Length: 159
Image (cartoon, rainbow, N blue to C red; front, top):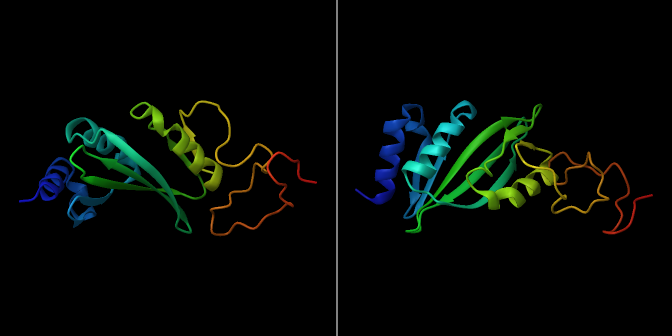
């Protein structure tokens, strides 16, 4: 049994509801999707028990009626687990994971700026990556985004 298959079995054994939601894509690549109500316990288990001490990236996805968040976790041996959670578009609020990974703050700010997802627990701070003059209600990575205002270059105010 490969290390990836062992992780798959451990996850499915601990969380039976994940059994058909875990896929070993290839060597060192595992994909899993957890229901939102179980995210906290699955994420904590991956980090603390299965030893995924690195959060490499956070990816936002616009899936139409919902948003997806992909947490790209890695072990020191190079195995990467991509954990997906889906949140409703009509209430784009999710919890921050900076208590586990303080360096994830910029990733959460980026997803917030580009998709309009609010991360509970994310402290106030500068916008990222959009400049401060970017209209607050415009999220350029949403599939249905159309600019409502003339967008000014960075450092200038839109007219």
